[in-house]
Image (cartoon, rainbow, N blue to C red; front, side, top):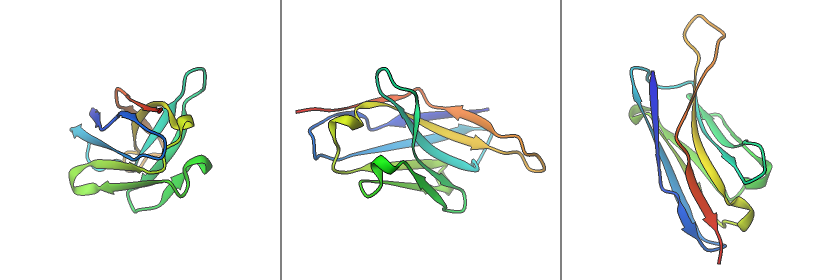
Length: 121
């Protein structure tokens, strides 16, 4: 099993910056993919950014150029640097890890507890 612990959320003014981090622990190491999703009130959960073990990244169009995902495989930690934050970035942000056991095509998803980010003046 794997546990994901997020930190770094909070209240920020429009145009400000925040950095999220998510540390994975347990008996599963080096997930295939680690990333961040968010859910705004009344909306479905959406992908924000993800990074594969080899470094390939994927971003939502709405955050490209503003958010940067990075990962420390040795520490099983993923980060999300968020710049130029907008009110529409307000949401609960969830850390996600995908594990695909060797020799299988099955992906197992693990989730953090979520951290609130509010962008408001």
